Image 1 (tube, rainbow, N blue to C red):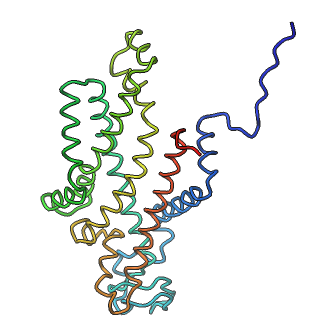
Image 2 (cartoon, rainbow, N blue to C red):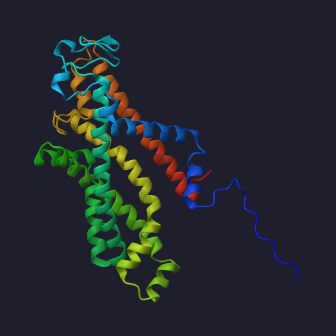
Length: 303
C-alpha cells in the first residue's frame, strides 16, 4: 500500500495559538487602530520625561506670566505652547504626558492587585465548594449590589488622599468582578476529563488548580482585566475631578480636567478640553482592544 502523504501546511495559516490569536485580532481594522492608539499613549506615558517639552513639576521651568496662554502661543522664554498653558503656566502638552503616566499606572496597578485577589477567591470558591463558596459568593453579591463609585467615595473619605489609597479603593471595587468570572469558568472546567485524570494521578489540589484549572480560565479573565483597566482609569479620574483622588502634587488626567473647569465659561477651554480628550482616547482604545479580545478568545462570538 502506498505510504500516506504528509499533511500539507498552509503557509498563510499561523501554527502557534498565540500567532493565530494575533492574526485574528489584527484582522479587524478597528481593533488595530485601538491597539495602535493605546500603544502610542503607553509610549508617551513611559517616556514622558524624554518627549515632554517641559517638566510641569519643575518650578524652575514654569513661568507664572505664561499662565492661561492659548494653544500655539509663544513662550516668554522661547518655544511654543502647542496646547496652551494652565493657570500656573504649565505646558498642557507636557502635563498631559505626565498625567497619562499617573492615570495608566494607577489603572494597571489596581487591576493587577484586584486580579490576583479575585482569582484566589474565585478558584477557592469553585474548588472547595460548600460553605467557602457560599461565603465568598455572598460577599461578592453584596459588594456588586452597590455602585462602584459609592464604595470608592466611602473608602477615600475614610482612608484619605494618596496614590496608594486610591489604588486600595480601586482594588476593593474591582476584585469581585474577577472572583465571579473565575469561579464561573472554574466550575465548568473542573467537570472536564482532564481534571478527573489529574485527580486519578494523585496530584495535589494546589497543583491541579494552579497547573491545570487556572490556565484554562485565563481567556475570560484577560478580557475582563482589559475592560477593568479602562473602568479603573475612569473611576480614578472621577475621584480626582471631585477632589477626592490623587493629591495636587501628582495630577492625573482627572485632576487636570478639574483644574480648568472653572475657566470654561471664560473661554479658556483648552485647560480641560485636551486632558479630557486624552482621557477619552485612553478609555476608548482600551475598550476597543478588550472588545476584540472577547471576540477572538471566545469562538462563539466570532463572526
